[in-house]
Image 1 (cartoon, rainbow, N blue to C red):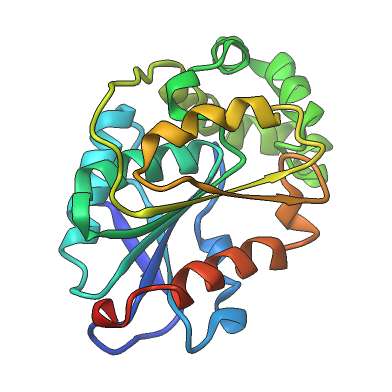
Image 2 (cartoon, helix red, strand yellow):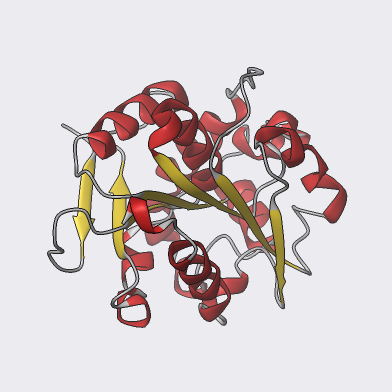
Length: 239
């Protein structure tokens, strides 16, 4: 099984592509639903890892798949766990990364947070209760124990990937970095973003949206606008 890349529609060679990574237990295909709002700006591509074999393996395989996908500008977007993976993929792609957009994610050097380690050790109802605190499960899942039995093992495996992550200092990214978060997110506070400054050559741009950890569920335009801004700011020679 290989890392899968899914796009809403075919685009010309050389067109900017924004590769999207989901949060723990999430589906990156949900982000591709925003394609209509970004028509003519960038193609959204859902990245689905081959498996949960460890975060280093996931990042290596995703970087290889993206590098082989096309010659156009590469933008990376991820939410929560997806943002951490996108950051590590950006490192592996080096100068090929044109922009990184990290959503709902503390600075990589702060991972794994104590809360992530704690949640990764939970099972059953205790895990369900923990995820419900910050909106990690849809209402229909919270109300259906059978659905929980089907979904929670993957969610827990994703949290374990974060818990096992070990930050390694490296050269700052040469690409631009945008950070977007919900003002009421209990997992990410302004102070948690300070160390992002050392991860790129230029000062990261910060954007704040109304809402919690999953602020974009009610306000997708908050992310769409940041992706559009990053894509439209690409140097002409890259497009």
